[in-house]
Image (cartoon, rainbow, N blue to C red; front, side):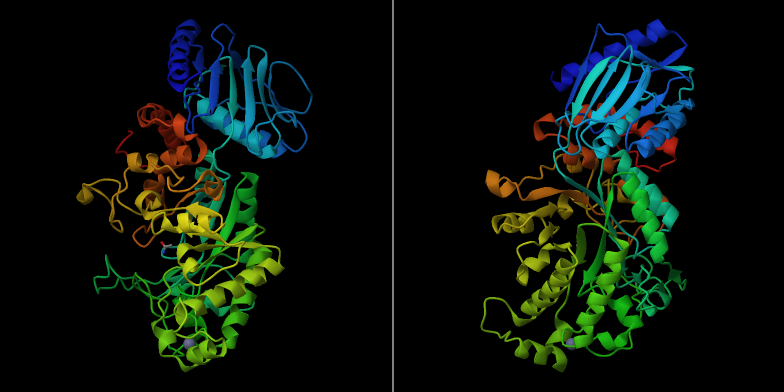
Length: 542
Ligand code: ACM
Ligand code: ZN
């Protein structure tokens, strides 16, 4: 059934069921975001009625998912359903079933008068079915019964990598806020949380071998006011995550089928680390945790052998905290000014034979050397790396994944060279940009203009790629940099409802996407935002 038809049938169903049900029941509605691949409403079938005695039956490893569904239903409707592991009719049943051939994260949901079943080959797929059911529920209508229309839903995502990033360095957000952010990702079927935890303006993760990283690097004495105005607020800004807290966040995310990918940004964006360990810089310092925004010239000294030891020691602890297949090692915006005038760096480049004669500048090859050392170290631990698209300039190993942010050219080049790529072009995926042209009515932002409609319009497969090359585009990610985002409420405002548009880019087939229909579905998701207490921008939905 095409989407328009299925939407209008769902709308009709809602009206007729409401009329039939009078005041007694509220009615669920599968006009959700992201829209499932296929929703077949059985017009003749009886709806399933959820009341306080309806059981959630779970099998195998699905206890956490069952509890999560129980919580979602209670939050939305006030009905706290009992859990059971006894097979029975008239229940909501969650099952892992290898015969549901919908891919690793796909699921099938069947609703009839005798129950709801959500089945998938994996617990992750069941979780996405739960998200769809949760978003179909009537929000906040505290009735004793909820009618769910008879339907068959078949669903699976377009991309395996569906990411969202958060910079907790420019402004620090505590563990409770990060968990809420993870809840926001789960609501949008996002499965990768790219956690930016090292920066010029603050080092945010405990590293036991280098305690000064957080003791010194975790605090900046003041922050510049506005856009590098030259005036400072005089207020220290501090915060970091202990390894124990970070592990708890990793588990919290894993429970929601989200992998945390940490980023240690190398070899630039390191001024906070240099404030803690000045001997790792070309000049020896002194350095301060940076108090303004931009790209700092103070980077790790490439000629100091302790630099590579430091990188490997830090990454070693990072791999012990974060079990993700990928570790993000940054590589963006590393000025080479200090290296050019540093005798140690120059001697190292000469030793490695990096001369001016090659097609790459010696300093670029030097950066490539450092990134490859990090990559090889992580490979020895069974991990793979992601780097920002600048790392294409220094030479890189075949297994490296490119994170294209300065447009999509990085992804095109990467895919043509046989590298996997993730797309986060500033044009469509930088959620620190303004959402409205009326900047005076908006909180201060970094610049740019990225309304929901533009996010929605993004087709992540660059048209210049062949079908084979396009297989290297593993997914899409939005980035939330926080120079101009001092509070978590404002993080939410910048992310929502742009995450709603993002998740259809990530989840739905290209030919299934329709902005006008998306806007019709958005108010029900916004009701869920309100129920969860999320702050969201109101330009396209009230
Ligand atoms: C970036 O925005 N510097 C990756
Ligand atoms: Zn140096």
